[in-house]
Length: 223
Image 1 (tube, one colour):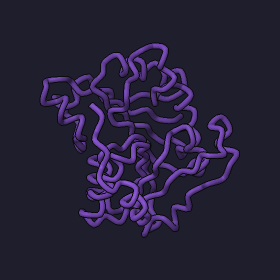
Image 2: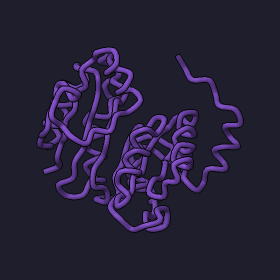
Image 3: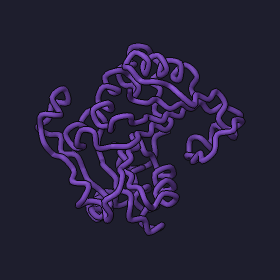
């Protein structure tokens, strides 16, 4: 079910410039996104100069805000295209008084235009849409076309951390990571019944786990 549009959404988005950067893709072709320079100056948008982490598909902000609170020595940039849920994440960050989190409104195709190459420590893909129909697989965030984008953003030896409740999507992701030259580690087929420590539970994760669904997780390191 689609979320009802938030009251005064446009006004709230306009008032969120302290936490929000909005992509302007009117003149962009995502196939050539890295040729246009809209690069974010991390030194200006974050209060402190410290390592930057990236979440793609941040939803209502549970992961990003918790990460920022638990890691005051790290900055996190959260990407989300749905403004209706993005404003909830921004409200959460503001209520928590966080100064090491920023939000980028837009889609992953255009990230090379906004994020400098080899500037991100880790990328988090938390419960991305699995796009289960095979004809839609190009939209999956672990499709090679996206992984090749993420590779340019990661620092050497950088890591992508993925979590999902969808077994078939997870299997597809493992294959894609391998094809694109990533080395897999910490692969879990049932995260909540594993010995993994430090897991930040997202909104979707809590929902699926309460239904008895296993949570799949992996780390893919850039070689």
